[in-house]
Image (cartoon, rainbow, N blue to C red; front, top):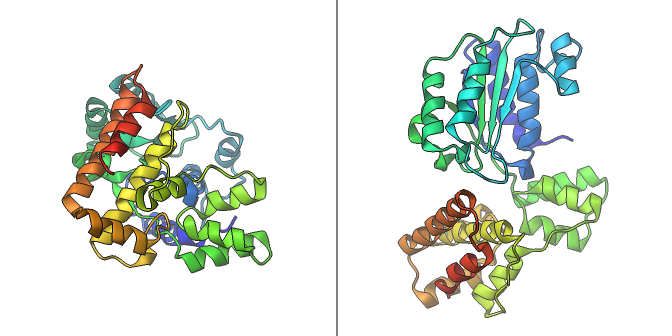
Length: 317
């Protein structure tokens, strides 16, 4: 699948590698809706390849091991069920990286959901990033780069994936499907212009998620009924709440419609902001309360996620 918005990041990585100035630590946001998982996979394979050119050769022993999913010099660590990544897991990873590379090439460590690192775990990783072993590369993929410790961010090269515009997303989706988009498909990509890969997957699988954003905006700005989250879907409702608040903040900053992430109808949202006299500071406080709730629900067991989210919504209307 051709994902043109990933090309600038790939070119930067490849150019640095060919010029011999590639950083030993990289931060690529975890955005599978934009294809970041494909970018990460190709980057890992490029680093592990024994004879790379403009991409991994695909034929050396290292590439064959990577393709089979059992490369001995590739190490991964990630959050399980959105729980905190503890210091013991990081120390175990660091210990494994002390070994000599099995394939006599590079060693690559990938930390997914890196924003779930505990402070102690992040500091343990920081020490290794400050004094990396030879030919060892780290790739951290947080969902939100801003949640990483500033000291950790400063030790990595940050790679920003720029989302396509609505028009670019429509054009890309039509080219992938090989046909003209239906009106429903146009409406879908317009609502999720920053998730073109997800939209493509939904259409081809004929399986569509509940439109949490539409339900929330209807309740928020049109006096519709507020949703009733279930035990298993609170993360989706919390994510939708965060996206809407982020867009409200962008509206307060008078950013153009094309900068909105979840396709809000700006007139309705702007009218709500003016009617309720909600300023940017208050919106930021609400957004931070979402982040705090996410951390609390992931770190503490036995909490009632749906009830907590409903209580959160009650403060906003």
